[in-house]
Length: 337
Image (cartoon, rainbow, N blue to C red; front, side, top):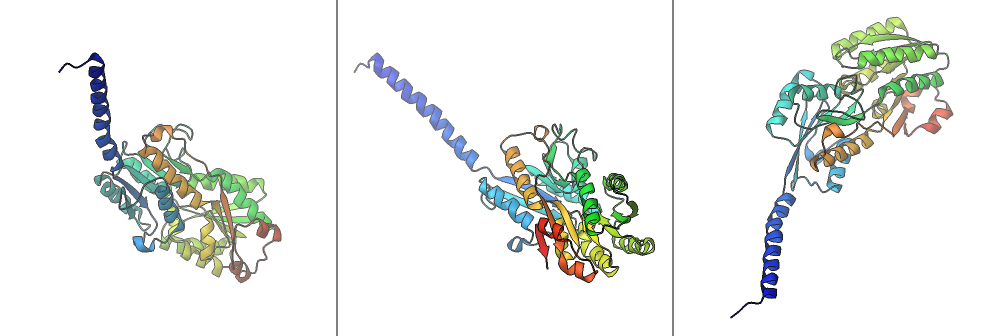
């Protein structure tokens, strides 16, 4: 039986279609079945999955789920915590890298520094880093240039705003103490920024350094000698991990204290003012998604915070004998009774 030229063309087209679609189908199936592994390094405690405590972790995971990454199906998140012990960070980074993670997330400046020293190839998404340019993590905010990108806390602008809050709460304040961590890569720079901002407001700054609990106790002994009108706690992993002790000592001394993280007001700080950490966690998940889809950290601009939260603890205000002005209460996002 003879086959016409038209039939040959038809057969060729069918064969070509089968080749193209037949070859692509397994590739698409394989792509859809790809399993991603993330490493998440933090100085904060990490509880069991079934009782994931922090809203930040929950928002991070939910945002990833909304983008199609489901734990146990196509995603594994390896959480590791140093529990505030910086010396553990290098080994934790090595452990995560040995698991061949696709992306490494680092919560805070010191974990980011540990990751930077360990790898120049694995993509790193930093979360809530104070000043990534001064810390040497990125070449610039708009063009990171390496394997690190993520979010910055915009510490320089927030320093002045926190001092302005102190002036609003305590119009006669003239001496402000600053508790800073000498082990933090950018706390010394933030201390100088605080000094400059205080000078513009007619206040004097007294810096007291402390990293661990024994040093924190010594710092408060020094603070009692200085008799400051208020205390600013610069953001660091140590300041967050040891917040209960710092807040307890400050309140016993009836020392109005402002933290750079709004959630610390829930553990007793008079004021917490800083970036919205839920929003930063959401953005971290979006960075991860972009990288898993093929984007390079070098090409993803560092994101500055656009949302901030002010929290006031009225119980603490009452305990230390301070009345919060109505103007501050009206601007507050969270009021702790």
